Amino acid sequence: SSHVIPDLLVVIVPDLVCVLMCATATVTDLRSYRIPNWLTLSGVLAGLVLNTLLVGLKLGPGAAFSLGLVSSVAGCLVLLISFGVLGVINFVGFGDVKLMAAVGALLRWPVALWALAYVTIAGGVLGLLYSVGRGRLGKVLANMFRLSKRLVGKREEVELHRIPYAAAILVGATWAALLKYVPSLRIP
Image (cartoon, rainbow, N blue to C red; front, side, top):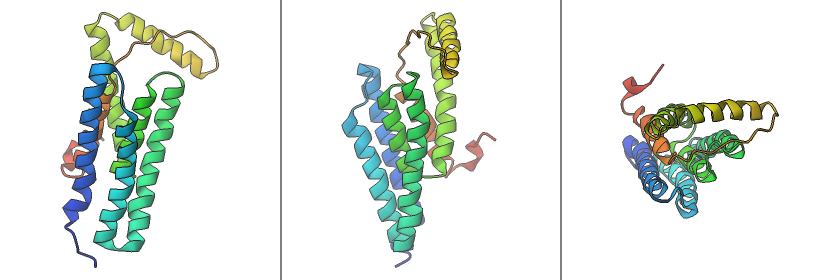
């Protein structure tokens, strides 16, 4: 039962679902600053089911659990928790948090960590471009300073500048997925 499906299929199907989900989220985020629950929750479910099923078909039931389901849950939880903290301090919206959880479920542990790193880089670049483009760089930097003070317990009001963060998630998740096929894209 160990070569029912090609190696590439095990990896490429969840990766393609991830990129399509993030692209769809980006379109809705650009239009309405919203990422629908049906998209993010079906992304989490797709990640858990696809990874368990595809790894199981490739490597058998034991691997389906340990390499498929467990690594999918681990990726989901790491990104949910790390972005959940950012959601609690109003740095990102909860649609972004749920989208990152789905990215983690689809890309699995440990690739989810690369997604986290690259989404962070893409988000920084997007935020910078957005604030410069709207003439708000000074205000955004002041907000970041206030947010850092909030992390150490001082309550200060922060003026939110909404950006469609799903675009950064799309770039970062795609970048992380591509590492599997083009390892030279890795930033050391």
